[in-house]
Image (spheres, rainbow, N blue to C red):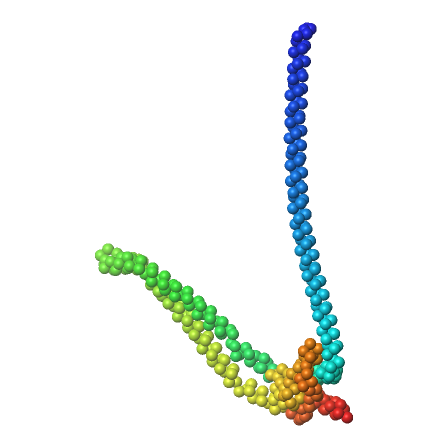
Length: 339
């Protein structure tokens, strides 16, 4: 069937109108997509700028911290340099020269005194160890067990547990007092049953409804636990008193002290210094402190600690061999220093 010219014209017009509408729709979609892309671009730009700003702040803080540390190190170095310069200037004065001379002599004295202190402790440690090895084993065992006899820890724990558990029967008595108020009805029924035993009921039937005594169990446990706690407490007191007044331990300790000059089972080390003068107690520490801090404190000559070697104690028959050997050696060293 052939189209007429009018029909063909109408169809072409419809096609052109549809194409124009499609083109307008595509332009709208492209514009919308373009606008969305621009918005996304701005969002990404702002996010990147914020992240870059945070990173810049962190970097700035780190840079400031590094700068502060560098300034502190520089100030410290300048202070040390100034102190060294001032000390170098001060040591040229009579006071500084006197300190430098004193410091050089003190540096030689300190190690010698430290060595003597260590040797003194070592001599006593060797003497105590040798004497302990000669003490009979049963004496050592009695002395070792003495602290446990004085504490009596097991009895103490048992008494505490017993008194603590006694709270439970007390709670049981409280509950029994409450429950007894509800047993009044059963008691009345039991009494009525007893009155009617010969007429209606037997006595066995009455005993079946007789209410029990709720106080018996808690009272029995309370007496047992309190009695156990008191018993453990009394035994602990008696055993501790027996341990404190044990004359056998005191006699054995006196015998050991008479034999060795000290009790090796109770002596942990030298209980006095190797020198006679109490003025030298802590002497080495005081000298070393002035040696280390004199450059900053800059003491006057009158403030300098007088340097000297302590006089050792005299050897004696009451002292162990190791201790006497040490004292003899110190006396010979002092004599050599004075020659």
